[in-house]
Structure formats: C-alpha cells, structure tokens
Amino acid sequence: MQLFPTNRKLQITLLVLCAAIIVFAYKTPEPPATPEKENLFATTGADYYMKHYRIVSSNSEGKAEAWIEGKELSHFPNMTTQLIQPYITVKDKQEETWTSKAVNGLITNGNEIKLDGGVQIEQVNKQITLKTKSLVISLDDRIANSDDHVELTTKTGKMTATGLHFDFDNRKINLLSNVRAIYVEP
Image (tube, one colour):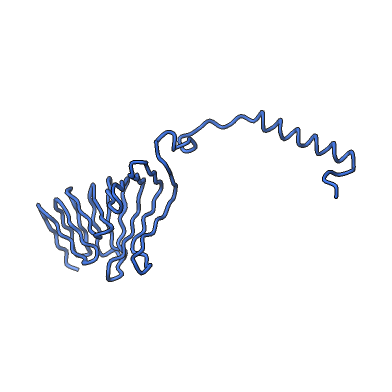
C-alpha cells in the first residue's frame, strides 16, 4: 500500500498546493478582535459562558415545570449567574403557562432569579399582562415579588400599584399598595 502517489508530477503538484495554502494562511491578516469574539472568560471572570441557551427544570416525576432561556448567560465562581434578555416560562398546577421576560437577570442562590429592566409577565393565552421595573422569581416556591410600580392589564381593565406578590400555582396576584383600577365593560 502506497501513501503517496508514484506519479512524480502529481507529487510536485500536491507539494506546491500545500506550500501555497501555508503561505496564504500565514499572510492572511487575522480580523480585529471584537467584544463578541474576545475570550469572555478572561475579560469578565466567568467560569463559563453560553449564547442562546435553554435550561429546563423538572419536577420529581420528570415533568418540565420551568424553562429559562435567553441571549447570553455568564456563570461566575461566586455561584452567581448573569442573564442577558432572559425569557422564563413557568407552568402552574392547572397547566397554564406564564412567561416572564426582562432586559437582565441575576441568579444568586439556586432557583431565585432577579429580573431587571422592562420586566413583563404574561399569561400565554394573553388574559393577563404584568409590567414592572424589577421582579424576583423563586422557582422553588413558584412565587414572584416586586416592590416597584406595577401595571396589570386584563381584557376588562387596567390596574396600577406599588408592589406585587404573585403565586403562580394558585394564580393569586396581590397588589400591595397605592392600587388604582380602571374597568372597561367587555
């Protein structure tokens, strides 16, 4: 079995082709580094980084109960995780699906997620929409809390308040103070 062709002309042609590829690769300038292409681990101190991620949380029976996905995720050695444009989906006990999205998120201790910037919670069938500046979601307790201004919109009206306590499983939304409501007849 021969590893190289016996034809001398073919050998020389292959050798010249390899040399041309090496010279081309050596002389081709490397594109300048952009923030997206830099080593994010070295520049941010993250121990791992993901783009366009999806994490699924299941119950003890293996049934998916919550999904966390988004544009970017950076995990740090101090056990915090930074989320860019997080999108969280939670199913309640009645199998209703709720989504939450924000500009930024931070996971600090296990399943507690702090959302910040343009936070919006929505029932998938579009019956209820909540908007606030910041929100803390505990996936273990399946509860969300906010101390900020909250705007709740339904198909029959709109409510505003300061502060929110939301129990996903029992579908209980408590507006805490300065509650104002506008009712629109269907």
